[in-house]
Amino acid sequence: MNAMFLPASPQIGSLLVALSLFAGKTLEGESAFAADPRIQKGATSKTASPLGSRPNIVLIVADNLGRESVGYYGREKFDTPYGRQDYLTPRLDQLADQGVVFENCLISTPLCGPARCAWNTGRHAFRVGMNRQCDRHRIFEEPDFGLPAEEVTLAELLRSVGYRTALFGKWNLGNSQNFNPLRHGFDEFYGSTLGNADYYAHTRHGKRGFFRNFEPVNDKGYFDALFTDEAVRFLHRREGSDQPFYMNLCFYAPHGPYQTPPGYKSGDRVTNYRNMVEYLDACVGRVLDALEQIGQARQTLVVFLGDQGGSSPNQYGRTLREESLKVICNARWPGWIPAGVRVNSPWMHYDLYASFAALAGVEVPNERVVDARNVWPLFEGKERPLDRTLAWTANENCFLDEYTQDAIRMGDWKLLIYRGKATGTDGLPKPDATIPCPTKIRGLYDLSKDPGERHDLASEHPEKVKQMQQAHARWKAECRAQQTLRLGDDS
Image (tube, rainbow, N blue to C red; front, side):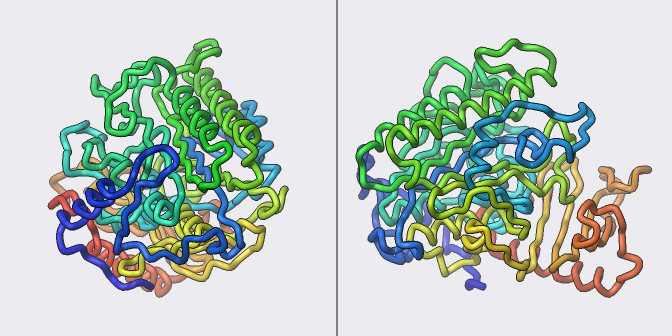
C-alpha cells in the first residue's frame, strides 16, 4: 500500500493546477501540461505501454442504467416491478459481443458524484472526502465543495504523457468554477456540472450549470444529443492525428427527470424511460460509427460503464447490497481484448484509473494511498481471484436525514452494517434526532453460495463478524485521516 498523504494546504494544490494551466497550451492538438511533481511518468513514448501500444481511450458512462435494461446481461434474469424490460439496445449489445463483459464490476459508492470522484481519482470517495452529492439540497451554495485540487485525476495522468483529454456531459464534482474539469486535467469540457437537470431547459431548480470550458452556454436541444454531437466533432478533429486521446462521455440518461428524447413520442414515466434508454443506445452507436469513420476503431479502447446498479425499473435503491453495487461494464479493443468473453472476477470500478494509466505508460501517484489496481488481465478475459479486502461506506455525513451503510468483503465473505438514529418496524435504521445512533449488523453472507445475500450467517460466525467489523472501522479511520476535502462536520 502506498504511503499516507496529507497535503500541506489546499492553496498548494490550487497553485499547482494554476501553474499547469498557465504553462501549458490549450490549443487544439496540444496538451495543456506543465511538469507536476505529483505525477511520475513511466515514459513518454508509445512503447511505454506494457502492451507495446498506447490506445486511445473512450470511457462512456450511463447514469442510473441497470443491467436489466440492456440485452447482454440477460433480461430474463431480472424481474422488475414493471415486468421484463425488453428495450432495444442493438448498438450496446453489439459492442458487448465484440469484447469482454464483466459480471462483477462493483461500484465503490452507489451515488452519482462519489462514483465519478472514484474513477477520476482512483480513490474511494470517502478517502477524498466527497462521499455525498455536491448539489442535493444547496445548488451553488457550496462554493468549497468539489473535487480538491490536491487530487491527481486520470485526465491529469494521461495528459502528462501526451494524451488529448476531453469531457463531454455530466461532471457533478463541484459547481464552482474552482472545480471546473479544465482545472483537473481536461483540455476540453462541454457539459453540465449539475447532478441532474431538465434535459431541454438545462436547469435544476432554476439554476444553470452548462459550460463550454469556463464559459456558460445557452445551446438549445436535448442534453445527451448535444453531448453526443460534441463528442463526434471531437473525434473527427482527431482524424489524421498521431496524438492519443482520452474522451470521457458522460450521459445524463436514463437519470430523471424522465423526458423523452427527440424523435420519440412522449408518454408516461415507463414509456419515457424506455425511450431514453433506446436513444442512449443510438448515441453510443454514433460514437462508435465516428471511430470507424476516422479510422481509429482498432486503435481505441472503448469502455461502457454504469454508475450504479439501481435504476427506475429495478428499484434496487442506493444500498450496499450486491444488486446495487454490480454495474454494467464491458470493453472493446480489437486485437487486444477477445470478443465474446465474460469475466466473473470481482473488481472495483475505480480500478479503471490504474488500468488506463498502465496502458498509457504512466505511474499512479506513490505519495498517497491509491485504491485502484491495474486489472488489465481481466480485460484480456483472464479470471483472477479476489486477493484484497474491499470496503464501502455510503451516506456517511451525506444528508443529515439519512442513515449510514457500511460493507466490507474479504474473499467470499461480505458483512453489511447499518447505522441510524433508530430502528423502524422493517428492521432498517430510521432518522430520529432524539435517539443515539445504534450500529446494526444487517447480515454476513457467503457470496460463493449466496450471491443474492438471502441467508444471514452472522449468528453462526460471530468471530468473523467481529474481525470484519474491526477491519472496516480501521479502514474508515484511515480514510478520514487522509481526506483532502475537509469541511468540518461534512467531511
